[in-house]
Length: 273
Image (cartoon, rainbow, N blue to C red; front, side, top):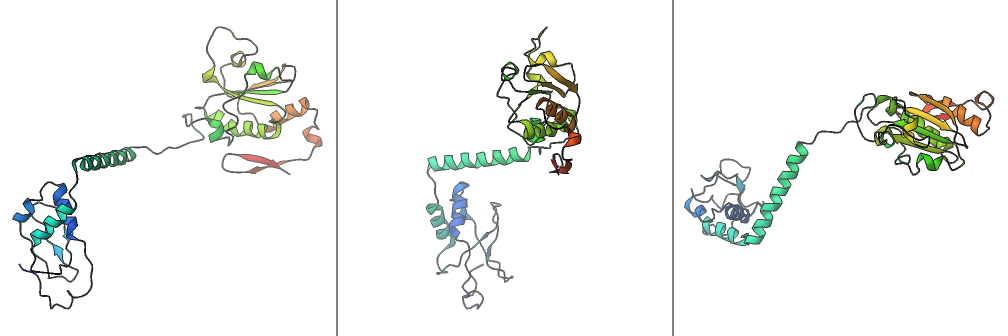
């Protein structure tokens, strides 16, 4: 079928369509630029939504045609012009294929990636518990060994934990709260049990000496390195605070201003007046 009547008022409106250079580029990339001359094209003028190039036997997607200024010019010349304008060198073609393969590979990788979930009340590993649940990434990794801390003439809190324990996850905010109140005057040492090298016996300056098979394990040393508190389990902040009050000769809780817990988020709390 030939071109539509140029006297058609709808055709004379200044609509812009995709250039046939796109058609030529598709033909060139698919390696069928020469085959396009063997197929005829026709316009579908039964709808007023615009000229549409009917799909050929190459089974390519529908491509919108442009408004040709000279309808006597053959469609084959437009296709050849588009193919020549977009013909790629072998090097560029190779880079284009490598880039498309990389994008496709990344897309497939994202589709196969499982979402990450951090659950407080389970025994699964989610990462280190102190940045994740305690909100304090400063605590780990520790900057001192237990032997070095015991020589500093400061009280020390040793916390033995594992990252895949619900009790340790719930205890992490308590350790962070102790660090907030006493971190400048005491050494807070959270040490993972998994990092303790197994052996038959340990020295009193080694964390393995104080591990009794339960986590979390909290051990408080005074300035002389003597153990003044040792208990396993999810201990309340107030219990640790009372022991530090004794070590620093502070007012007991009964004689100080009563503080109340206020929720900071779904995990952490703080004490306020």
